[in-house]
Length: 193
Image 1 (spheres, rainbow, N blue to C red):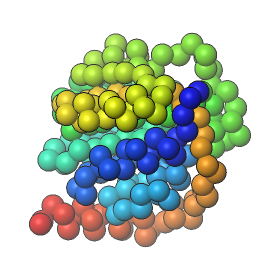
Image 2: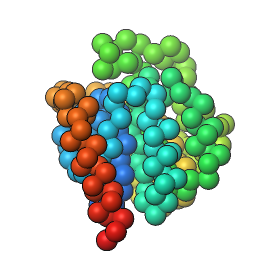
Image 3: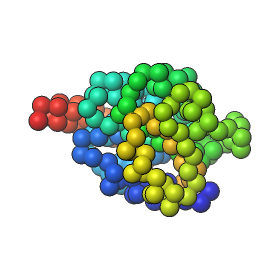
């Protein structure tokens, strides 16, 4: 694997608008909260496999906003059917980025079933996503981001990366009433502006 997750997230940050909703799970969530703390970060860490489903609900309820899902490969394996649901929901504001490091990272880096053969981008394409790709270099990710966001969703991007710096896992915050309250208030505040 040729690039690190935190480097890729740093590349993503300038492309995230103030009004975008970011749904992040597990290690991507912990990294994202340190690198880009913001009130419209929706944390769904306690719901393994549910990032795409939560993102879909938010995209349907907020069609004027982009919803960016930072999913994990182990997490997505637990809810592959969501890809078909997302693809058939007609959400043009849905951008799905998958951390494809081929292990259950937060749970001890145990290997995924089929780790060497599963083709997540292929599965998303077969499910009906408008666009689907796999990227294995930081330069490729940086170069393709403007094009990805210029296209209507749902868009799927599998990122073949490895863990970067070890960021703190702030379970207290992600499971807190404060995290949910900040998100709800930001959503309400920006929808009335």
